[in-house]
Length: 262
Image (cartoon, rainbow, N blue to C red; front, side):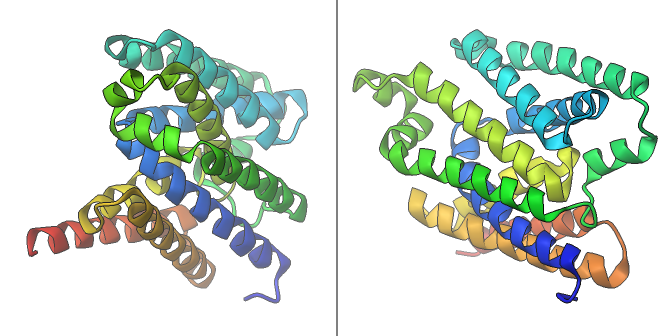
């Protein structure tokens, strides 16, 4: 299996994706932004469609659309009461643009399928390096803003009282989340990216009470899903996304049962 370069690329990229999604997912769950991660995945599809239309690599278009939309959402949803409306409005606009760009593009429908559901064979060594760079950027952000981000994610009111610039932290977090979504979509596809961002972290809540413990469990769960999913996809020739989603669901329900039986 590892004699094939595309499987080497898939495992290398998948490993970095699992790490960054496991860590970022803890903050996504802590900030109750699972809905946003799903919307960003759809916006990522739109960005990839725009990139294909422009003749760019799909990842570049995804980064452009997800980052711009994240900043807009961050600015428009300062008040929590307006957050869902802002997310819905912006995601609808970008999704419509994505359908338009795909319709007028000269590329065939298989490109859209790869964007939506991921393509292991399509991962090149250059894209592996892109994944590595974006992962490093995301992890550096988490490292330098760990305390402020943790405080704002799990005690927003307390963070405001302590003088933390919560709006700035939120916007920066959304931009880094956009990087993570665009990166992970290279393997699992834009429609299923929320699986790695939400299920491992949601399961981690049932087995750990500390943020660092949740991160460790979420990363391990994400790695198991990606590694095993890639292997099963290679053996069966079935979509990798299906196996990743199934494995992560099994881990989540296993953690839920573990918590109930404690």
